[in-house]
Structures are given as structure tokens and as C-alpha cells.
Length: 420
Ligand code: HSE
Image (cartoon, rainbow, N blue to C red; front, side, top):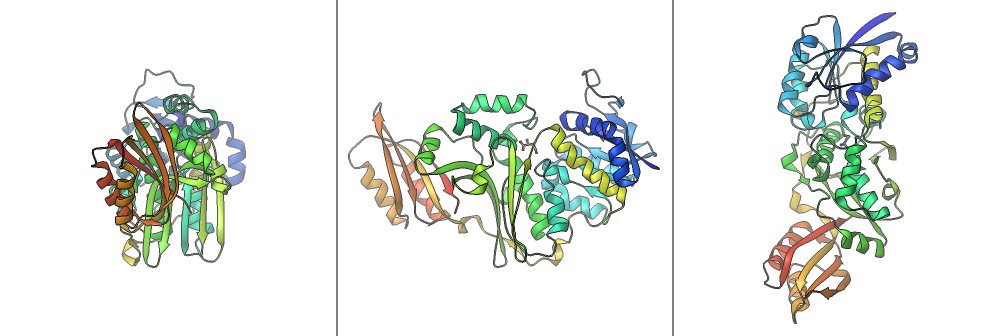
């Protein structure tokens, strides 16, 4: 049986799982593909760290790059520019590349495709861990125009929100727990400020629409400002709070955004809890399809990495992102054009005329209030919580910046879009 040697760069939670699964399930995998995938070498940053893996180790990247017998290199080192340099070297050496690095792909996916067209570059593990969403978009749904894609793309923030909503856990405790469980990024800011979900959405948008957007081009907001008042309000009005990545085709424009949403408790995606991820993709021919599974964690992500090794071993090569942006008439939609209902939280000194002034600013900006809750003032400060009817994003920004400049405002306003 043919032997395919594999090198692993980065043997942390995911890398160690990849090595173990390849070793422990070798028979099963070989039977499925008719070739043996053999992990022979791994490169790590810190050789003194104790690791529960059985493989030759080095801290020199050339240990793998200069080894001509290694056909496939798995990049699991994380980071952006340094990882891109390594990926380029892998391709220059004419080796196949498998990466789980969504941050690097968010910036350099088109660069990689340009360097080596129709060369095996696998990135299934970069989006939603164990869910085969890349292959679903590249293969299963390839006959369709993708009308929309909406998903819970970050397991850590979903885990934190679930703990806050269901167990009244504090944000900090829930984050610590997610780190202990190995869900969070090395820098967990990327999970909670929405960046990680943003990176994943951009990768999916390239497959679905051929859009070469970068993180700075789209709305990316995280969960760090959500507090117990927001959760209680959502609960009272029949919502839960989720961090969603949303891609929508509107004529020839594509709306891309990542932010928390208030979402109807009864919707399917509202029931995707804990570290699980869930994605709904609507195609013009197939209708709605739904994907659910573990979005983080060593074994789930390793399962996706190995699916790329298997695809490469079977000899299925095609352009990494499916098609070239130059053929594409779809354009990124302007951020201000978003229309939504909004939940707004204000914190104001409890004085006469405050409500009148707020409603006059809202009505001047064509914003109509749908539901309203004023919590009894504590220490002279009142919490005003309300939802709006459908409004224009730019009007919400204008109104809130005028409200925030009033002297009765105690701390900056906060809003969450309501998912329809
Ligand atoms: N930190 C990521 C998450 C891991 O929580 O979803 C998977 O990309």
C-alpha cells in the first residue's frame, strides 16, 4: 500500500490529536483510502514542554521543509504573517498544505491560491471545527447560488453566552472554563471580540461568493459588552443572545457581518448551545440546509484536518477557493445599508425630561420604539431598555451618538441587532 508521509507544524491541542488519530485509526483510514497516512515529524516552539505524543520532534521548521520524503505539511502554528511565510515555503517545496489557520486565511487565502493554482491546499478545519462546511460549499452545494448563510461560528463565545444565560455564570468564569476545556484561541480576545468568527465568515464568503474581503472591510462585533440586564431583557421578551456570522445576497451585493443578535428562542439556531456550532445555508435550488457539530476542541478539529489529508491522498485537486475573483460581479454591500430591528440599552441619570429628549432624538432619526422597559433607578441611575421597529443602521448610529452626548447619559449606549 502507498505510504504518504505527513509533517505537523505545531503540536498543541489540535496537532497532538491529529497525530494520535492518525496513529490509532491508521487501519481504518488506510482501508478507506487505499494508502497509509504516516505522521513522521512534528515541529514545536518549545521542545522542553512535556507532550503526550509519539513522534520525532524538532524546533527547526527545516526539519520538515527540507525532508523530501514528506508530501503533506499540516500548519497548526497559528498567527498570521509568520504562518503565511511558512505556508509559502511549503508550497515552494511543492508539498501539499493543510491548514486550520483561519486568521492567516482571512488575510492571505487569495495570495495562497495565486501562488499555486490547482495545488492541494486543504482548510476544512479552519471553519467550525468538526463540521464539514467547506466541503459542503465546495462540493455538495456547488450547483446553487447561495442566497444566505447564517451561523454560530465561534464555539468559545457560544459556550460563554450559554453559561451566562442558562447558569447565570459570570463572563470571566465562563471564559476561564472555555480556556481550560481547550476551546479558546491562544489569544482569547479573538474569540470574544468576534474576530475569530469574522475570519471564518470571510473564508465561507469566498467559497459562496468569491468575495475577497478582509476583516477591516466588514462589521465585526463581539460579546464582551453583553451583561446580565441584556440577558434578562432578552429572556423576558422571548429571545436568546447569540453571536452570529451573517452573509446575505441582496441583488448583486453581499452583506457580511458578525455581531451578537437577539434571536427568537424557538428558532433552530437559538438552540445551538455550549461549544457547538450551527450553520444554515440557503441555496437557490436546494433550499435551506443545516449543519451542526463541535466547532472547537482537539479531536473535532483534528477530524477535519484528517479529512483534508484523505482528500489529498485520494488525489482530488482543484483551485482552493473554487473560482477567481476577477470573474465576479458580486460586490461587498456598504455597512450603513443594513436594516434591522434593534435592542438598545441606555443608562441615564433619573431626571425630568430625559425620556422626552430621548424619544425626540429617536423620532428625528425615523426610529420607532416597539417595546420599552425602565428599571427602577438605583443610586439615581435608571436603566432604559427598549427595542425598535425596523430601522436603518446609519440612523441608529446617528441617534445614539447624539443621545450619548447628552449630559444626562451616565455611560455609553449599547445596542444589539435583532435577528429576523
Ligand atoms: N476558538 C475557536 C472557537 C476554535 O472557539 O470556535 C475553533 O476555531
